[in-house]
Length: 266
Image 1: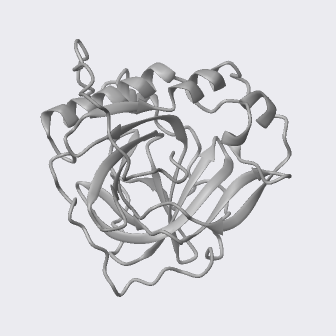
Image 2: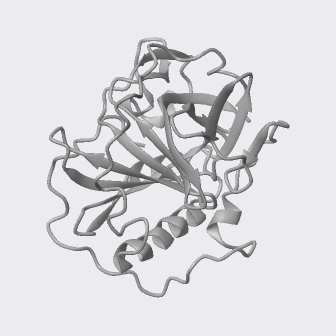
Image 3: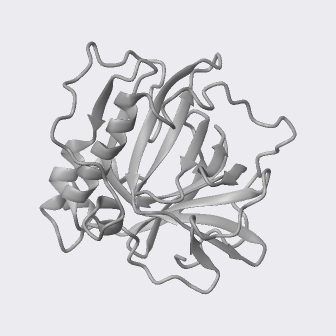
């Protein structure tokens, strides 16, 4: 997951090699989505995005990331739409957020993982200082796809965040989406060149299986390769859809995280 990506920098100098010999993912128990399905028990109000009642455009939504059952990252945005293509969210620059930090204010990426797992941590409220994000969470899939624009409003790239299949929930009037980030990600340029991101983080953390939350790294990479076949084919969602998106000007970013943002994982 990017913290504050430099979205207007150059993409890869030349297209990486095309994928070869990778079969498409289906719905069998051995496909990456099935292997990466969320293991946390859902409460009665939680559903997969494929079966959840649709969220309403304009609703305020809490997007949360966990390491198994431990809350580590929260952002607030608005529902753009929710249909058979998935749940679309708008997470604006400056929205309220919370992130897990060490007692001295450092984050997961500010120290080796061997040091991080020995740190006392606390959820710290702040604001999102990265760029605006348009996010597509698919109804079935171990990923979300993010659209980034520069500060002049020009679309500059997609970001594929590899993660557990999302769970949607409603509780006391609050709506949310819960997932677990799988660390390995992909940048994709408008010309559909691509590069893997954070491979070193995945490799470093796999050495600590008692503390790490990614149980099947091969399935994570297979899910990324499945998405790359869509990239190389210019297929949805990498076909130009929503690259001209603009948020509803009537939406107002909340001043603070809503009550219930830190409820147990759905």
